[in-house]
Image (tube, rainbow, N blue to C red; front, top):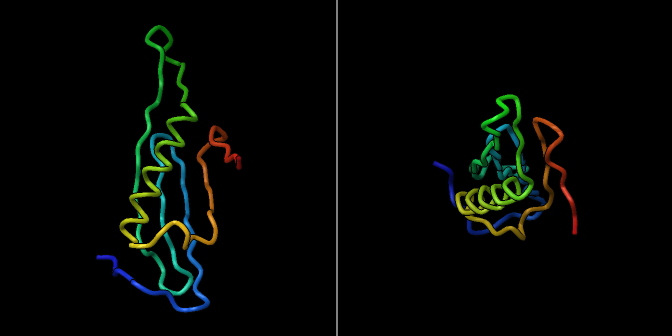
Length: 102
């Protein structure tokens, strides 16, 4: 069970680690002093063509929807707000996920 923290000590840094895989994204919320506070997973589909068994693709919209879902779940498990996240670390299996700041 992950402990719930109502207050934070000065000097702690909280990072969201994001790992995009073939069919899902995993988000872990980690505190620099306390370690893992919470994590969650959200899946997204692999789009294939019936007439071409070698064709597979993914959707950026699916990736972003799953990222939001997994992040909200992980924040809920960690019992913190998104405003407490100091940084985001991204890892992807391939090159299909491109973070864009708008």
